[in-house]
Image (cartoon, rainbow, N blue to C red; front, side, top):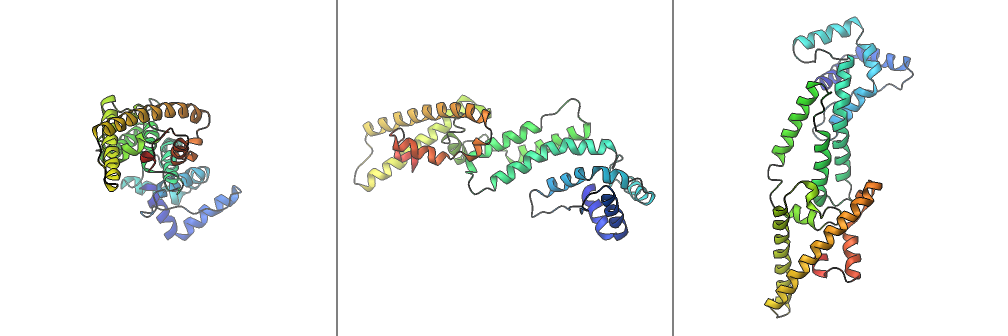
Length: 277
């Protein structure tokens, strides 16, 4: 709130904005404007935070002006600014918050990539964010409170996260993430996901047979169930093997194409075409 208010203030008070530009030039910087919140841009908070940290030395000098100090003091009294605005502790909090917002920004940019299968990566992205929200003993209380609020917001947004859904089916069929235990789900939950996959597989196979005037016999059903079980084992094995590769080169997890993997397995006769479809 304070950073947004400060940006609005500068844009409506030219002499303050000019003073800030002058300090930037004196520090041999190209003058930059303050960034404001934008409801249309997921990353506006990150960009605003980054800009404040980029101009940290500029703001510290700027805040020494009597007229700026007067404005900030008034805002603090009105609870529009923190008591330590533009002081080292203020920027320390921003740096701690940046560790979280940097990951959120990265996740958003990755998810917006047209080459990234987003659905099966949701648990992976959430896990990355949750790791940054772990409370650290030496961080400011204000940062811990902010992290706690952020985590509560995530839990509310994804309240039904641990219920079997089409997302978890996509995750289980993605060779990068097929070992669902890495996301903290129970063995019974994984079994439930694969029971759903098996049902979908059998329904699809029955429909294809029906289109050819045939029906899904007990023998064919048993063969299909065995295939599902075998596929599950192969996927879990593949995910554990890939995890070793990704550990050595983390960027590979983003460029890896699960559909190409399935195509390759199908061509080698190691995957049923029904799964690929």
